[in-house]
Image: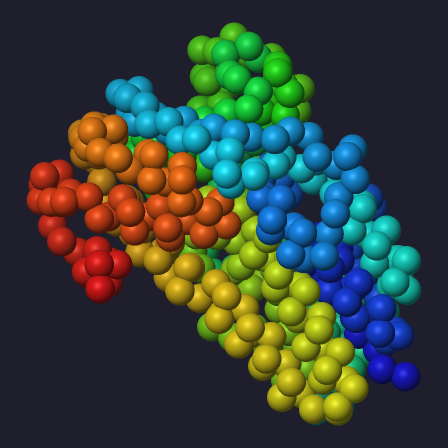
Length: 380
C-alpha cells in the first residue's frame, strides 16, 4: 500500500492530507506543536471566493468578521479609501480554521501526529525518509509543508513581524487599516484587522525593526489594551525555484506561496496544498513521479504572473520615500483609481490594483523617481 508523510499541520498540509487520504492512500501528518492552530500563523484575511475554490465552507464559528472597506494612510496620514464590498473579504479565526481542516483530513482517513518534530529528511530512488525524534519514518512521497524554516533553508528570506490582539475604539468594525511608512516599517507596513466592533488584530513588519516597540507605541497612541502578543515571520519574497524534486514535494510557506504584497497565503498556499495532493495521488496511482510536475505547472499557471507583478511592485515601492508616498496618495485621490479598484479589484489578485495604479499618467516622473527595471517590466 502506498504511503505519504506530510510535515506540518497547517493549511497546505491539511488540505493535501484530505486530498490524498480520501483516495485510500495511507497518509500521516507530523505536527511539531501539541495543538493544531497554536500558535496562530497569520491574521486570517481571505476572500470567501478563494476558500470556496479550495472546497472549503468554514462553519460560522470560524468566520470572525466580514470587511467591506479599506483605508490606506501615507506617512503624513493622508488617506485613500477603498470600497471592498464586491471583494467579499472575511476574517477567519486561524486557530479554529486549522482545527476544522484537521477534522476534514481525519474524516478522509488521514492520521495526525502532534508534538512530533521532523528534524531532517532525505530520499533515495525508492523512498523518502524523515527523522522524528529517535525514529525513522519512510514513505513513497514526502510533502514538506513545515513553513518558513524550510523556506529559509531553500534560500528564501523573511521579514520579522509582530502581531497583537487588542481592545480598542478607534477603528470601524468593517474596515481594515494599512499604514505605509518607509521609516517606521521599511519594506512593509503596519495594519489593523478588526474582528469585532472593539477587538482587532494589529501588526507590523519591516526590515531590521523592533516590531514590539512599534506596536507598543501604536497601542499607547490609540489607548488600546493588548490581550496577546506574538512574533511571527512573514514570507513575501516569492516562490522557490522548484516545488518537486524526486520524491520530495513542497507546498504552502515552504514553497514561498504567500502573496509578495501582504504575506497572506491562505488561498495561494491552500491551492498549493490542494494541487500537490492531487498530483501525489496521480503519481502513486500511475507509479510515475513525473506526475508531480503537474502540480507546479497548475500553480504557476494560476499565480505565476500574479506573483511576478506583485514582486515588481514591492521592489518599486521599497524605493519610495515618505514624500513620494504622500504625493502618490494625493495623485490617487485626484484620479478615478479608488472607484476603479472598488469596482474591478480582486482581493486574491492584487495585480489588478497594481496595474491600475501604475497606469496613472506620468506617475513616476511626477514623483521624481527613476524608471527602474521593475517598472519597465510592469508596464510591458
